[in-house]
Length: 536
Image (cartoon, rainbow, N blue to C red):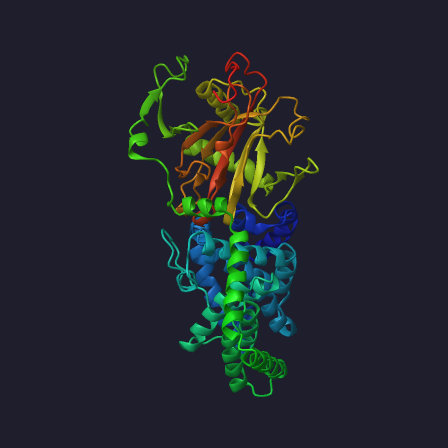
C-alpha cells in the first residue's frame, strides 16, 4: 500500500508538468475538472497526516473533513459541479490562497508524505491571475444577467446541480479584486454584501473594520459623500483609533462644510450624478445593451409574421447520395441573415472523441489584432481552444466530410476544426468571423480568401446562458447538444454581410463545448457562384 502511494506521487509528479504546462485555468471548464482530482488527492494526503498527529491538529482535521465532503461531491460530476460559477471561483480561491495558508499552519509538524505531495502539486496550482479571472467572471455574469449580489451569494441560479454559496469572506475577496481594478461600483456591491452577511450573524474571519474601510472609500469615489461619512462613522465606532478613518472623516467634514457655505451641495450632487450617468452611457454602448438583453432572452426582433415563414424540413444535401435515403433534420433559426440548424448531426460518441483529442491541446483562445495582424489573447474572449486536422482521426475526417455534404461547400480550403471550451463566465463578445475591408491581410497567409461561411457544432447542453446572439438583427440561438448551426458570412458577390456580427454569451451555469469550421472562398467558385449585385 505504501509503495503504491509513493509510486502514485512520483508518477503524478512526472505527468503533471505535461498536463498543466498551460495557464489561465479559469478560461476552460474542461481543464478545471482536472483540478478537482488534484484537490481530492491533496485531501487524501492531508487526512493521512491528520491520523498521525490528530491530537495536535484538530483545526486541520476540521478543514480536511469539509474539503473531503466537497471534493467527493465534485469528483462525481466535475463538469456539473464547475458549471456553477460560484464553485469555480471558490476552487480558484481555495487552491490559490487557502491551501497556502494551510501549508503555513502545518509547516512545523507535517509528515513527509503530505509535504512531498503538496510540494509536487502546488507548482501546478492556479495562480493570482486565475483567481482574479474567476472573480471578474462572476462580476461579468452579475452584470450580463442582472443578478443582485444576494442572489449570486446564495447560489440561487437556474439549473444548478450543486448549489453553493459565497461566505462573507468570499464576498470581501470579490470586493477587493474589484477595488484593485478601480471598479468602485462592484466594490461597493460586494463589500455591502459581506457586511450584510456579517450583520446577519455569519461567523467569519472577515473583519468589519476592513470591509467598512474599503466600502467607505468606494462610495466616496462614486460621489456619495454623505454615505461615505456615515460608513466612516460606523468604522470609528468599531475602531476609534483607526488612523486612515480619522483622517478621512476630517477631510469629509471639511468638504461638507465648504459645500454648505457655498450652498452648492444639491447642485454638486446632481452634477456628480449626471457625470456618473454620462460615464455609464459611454461605457455601455447600444450594441452592448442589445447583446446583454439577447443573452437574457430579451429584445428578440422576430415578428409573428416573420416567424411563420420559418420552417423545419428533412434535408438531403441537395440530392447528395449519402443523404437521399437518410436525410437530416433541418430547421430555420433566422431569416436575414439566414441561419439554419441541423439536428442530430454529431453523435455523443463522436463528441467525446473530439473532446478527448482536443483537451490535451487546449490553450487560451486568441483573436486577430487588426493593427499587427498577429494572434493575441483578449479580455473579451474567455475560452480555450484547440485545432484538429482530418488526417489525425477518422472521426474528424468524417465530420469534415459531413460538413461538406450538408453545406455543399468545399472543405479542402477550410480551416481545421476548432474546438472550444468556455470557462467561468466564458464568452466571446460581438465580432465578425470574416475580414473587413480595413483588414485586407487578415487571411493572406492562408491563401484561401475570406471566410465565406461558419459551421458551429454544439457539443454540450448549457443549463443557463451561453447563447449565440446576433445584436445587429436581434437573434438568439441557444446551445443544444448534437446540433449545428450554419450561416454565410459573405454575400455571393463576396462582400461581407455585416448583419452576421455575433457573440457567444457568458455561460451562467453549466459547461459549454463547441467546435466550428470556417469555410473559405477558394474552391467555392462553382459551388456558390458570384453575383453582380453587392448585397444579393
